[in-house]
Amino acid sequence: MQSRFLSAFEAMPATLQTALAPLLDDPDFEARLSASQVAALQQQTQMDADTLALALLPLAAACAVATVSHFNVGAIARGVSGVWYFGANMEFVGAPLQQTVHAEQSAITHAWLCGEPQLESITVNYTPCGHCRQFMNELNSGTAIRISLPQRAVSTLADYLPDAFGPRDLDISTFLMDRVDHGYAAAGDELVQAAVAAANASHAPYSQSHAGVALLTVSGSIVTGRYAENAAFNPSFPPLQAALVRLNMQGGDVRQIKRAVLAEAENATLSQFAATQATLQTFGCIELLHVTLNKA
Image (cartoon, rainbow, N blue to C red):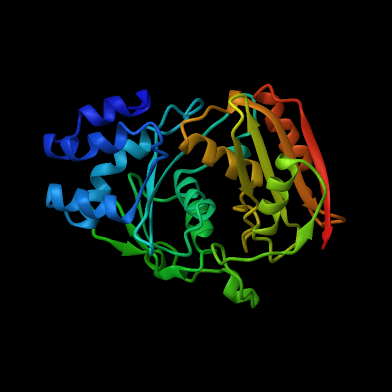
């Protein structure tokens, strides 16, 4: 079991510990549960889905990297596929606070990067802030997505974000988590091609500034992230942060990044390069290749 989960696991009821132990002891556990694993946990604990998700929140919060606030927030994004994805806040000493990852963003991005087509619910241990409410409004679930918190009745995003402004108000027809392929091509090694593939799946309907990041770790693994733009602009999620979410959920560390590639559409309105470079440098990674993309 990853050491970060130990304290949360030991505080759980014995029945839940017994059910979870084989899953958490798997060295390949990447902070998500398959539909069959969720069903097995429900059967063994006799918990309904909402109760089980709330009970698992301490494990999600244990993934937090709260080096500035020392305040751990956990979230679980529950997909229509039946898969549950953990998420947690991330903060980075030496980087601007704008680079911070919120728990809800983490769980949603985790699901998106794993290919989840749509979310039906978000479970979180603290009330979503306005930033996260707006971020969630970009989803193809719309304001119907359910939000579950401890000791509160389950509500929807519409309850938390009345009179919402989002992509539908701007006649956008492709939403966050819809599958897309922007058709870019670029020559290069495996890391470059991974960054290009991420850019091709990015969500940038307002600026068309599609972007993707690929990170190579010291262990030789490759982790990717995609840009997720927002109708309100400020809650837009950079591709590097998306990759850092995936790295964290896999149990990795930002200080393990050896090399990075940022792939962006040529002559795009916006560029992720300066922010990506500056943030990577705070982790000790100075090798960043910037690739510009054209349509195939």
